[in-house]
Image 1 (tube, each protein chain N blue to C red):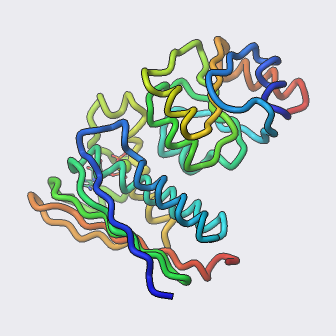
Image 2 (spheres, each protein chain N blue to C red):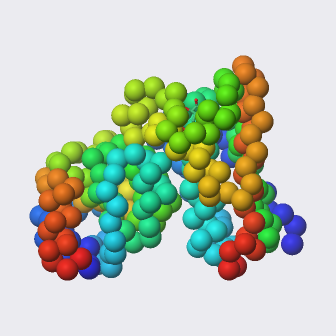
Amino acid sequence: MAALTMHYTVDGNDFTLAGDCSSKVKKSLTQLGFDPATIRKVAIAMYEGEINMVIHANGGFIDVSIEPDKIVAVLNDHGPGIADINKAMQEGFSTASNKVRELGFGAGMGLPNMKKYSDEMNISTKIGEGTIVTLTFYTNKTNN
Amino acid sequence: MLLKDIIKLTDSKLLSGDENKEINGCYIGDLLSLAMSKVQKDNIWITIQSNINIVAVASLTEAGCIIICEGFDPDDGVVSRAKDENISILQSQLSAFEISKILVCNGF
Ligand SMILES: Nc1ncnc2c1ncn2[C@@H]1O[C@H](COP(=O)(O)OP(=O)(O)O)[C@@H](O)[C@H]1O
Ligand SMILES: [Mg+2]
């Protein structure tokens, strides 16, 4: 089977749409018959990544490729970049504004959750240019 | 427990979704990242968050229902989005503790 690819634009100005892309990917994976455990992992990790693009990076785009044995999501933004990845990866570390925190975001658990729920996570970032987060999920690790 | 029994016991108002479904387990919390990883399929999610993003979290986690507690009103657009996504939202005047106490005392 050739990889099924999907391309999404994440609107950085519209909080009400945050999570839309993750929802669409979840629906596709469900239709394709992936097992619930895999779908849950992808949904959680992608949602966190998508939220980060909205609250920290003014949006961007997400490319997802679905193959029988793996799902790869590439989240690409032209935001401020991440100055210290080790610090950003710590549970509880967040630079989110008070306004964003009032909405329930900014717990500083996003990147740790993305790492926890993906099988591989790679962050490539440059200050002033943006961030690319690549999440890989192997579907054969679960009972698919 | 059926959602309609939960509604009756906790004196909640059903704002959206189906009340004839089976609900199991519960998560209480207002941080979306934590809810995202803790809420399990068919759970009740009790929160005071009332913004549109709770619908996405409930949908992605396949929560059985959201109970917005302490009498908070959902923001504009939340209920209609929840209807579109087939998410059940309840509104309760009670606190998260009072809701859980009632449910546990009734065998939930
Ligand atoms: N795409 C991004 N662009 C710029 N900074 C980011 C991005 N993603 C994460 N960060 C930085 O890493 C920190 C930690 O991210 P995360 O663990 O998701 O927590 P939170 O989003 O709750 O702040 C953020 O507060 C932010 O400073
Ligand atoms: Mg985050």
